[in-house]
Image (cartoon, rainbow, N blue to C red; front, side):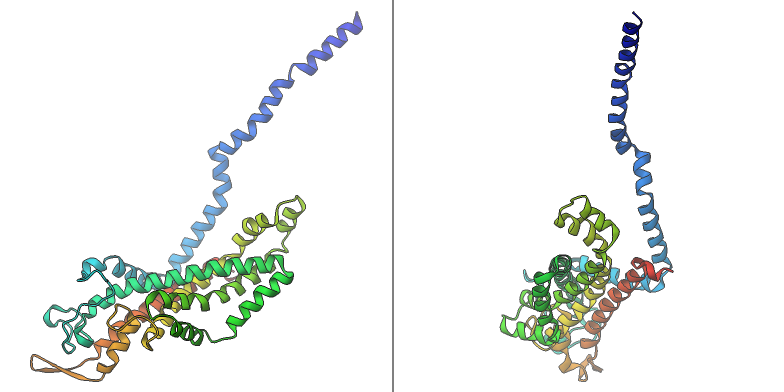
Amino acid sequence: MADEQKSKTTASVNNGPTPSTNNKSMGSPQRSMLDPETLLKELEPRLREIKNALYMFRENITALVGLGFVLFIIILALFAPIISPPTTADTMYIPRDFQSPKPPGADGHLLGTGNWGTDMLYGIVWGARTSIVVSLFVVMTGVLIGLVVGSIAGYYGGRMDNLMMRITDVFLSLPALILAMAIASILERNLQNMMLALIIVWWPSYARLIRAQVLSIKENTYVEAARAIGVKKNRILFKHIVPNSISPLIVAATMDIGAVVLVAAGLSYIGFGVSTGSAEWGRMVSDGQAWFLSTVTWEGQTYTASWVVIFPGLAILIFTMGFSLLGDALRDILDPRLRR
């Protein structure tokens, strides 16, 4: 009897509390994942980092100046149809009256006219849109190609690394502007082919940069831990290594947006870009150089037609300086070593 009672007691102890305990243990992880307080605690370090970055940005005078220049160009591009409505389906075509240059304010032309009487205001505002499209497309495509090539070469190493980096070195061994000129001279001279030439010469530097970052980060402890628990190589590369390697790439890309516009303007200036009379700042400088030191007469007064070069040149300067200052500020904010 004693043994029978003891066995019943033991059975009740073993069987009774077990279901409720298991239910709690199964339910608690789900509740903790959906708990707003838990999510807030997990996001708190990132929110603190974002808040600190915004504070550093507000305190950086050069960053604010660069942001102001960039916003000015973006506003011109966004409101181009309102500021200077197009007269043809081709928005790159600058309206003209086929007369000599007129000074700013003449015949309703706020910034005057250029070669063949092209409206300078139209060229500036629509040239802003052209410059933004060209720079963003070239930089983003170059970053994508460089990111894939550099990350794969740096992580897998061996023959793949040697092959990819030797191809990259071939492009880097040639002067970028000379190579872009050679490619653009072979192709038809239009905006699309100019962007293609710039992409070909722009991606190798990004590949080199991301490869160096991957080589450094892949030796960190958390990467070794991911390998130890059997995480696939592709997941380690694109989930753990690339996100932690991309900060220098963002800074370089931001600063290169202005550099792309400068090189594109150089190609157009020497005749390897868009056709004459197009809303592209480098082409406008090239078209107006013949009038730069010439004199024109309007309503009995003589003017030196310097505005045909000054206005598009000033637009290039503002665009390039804005993104350069903004990229320099991002480098100070995103690099932890520069915060100390």
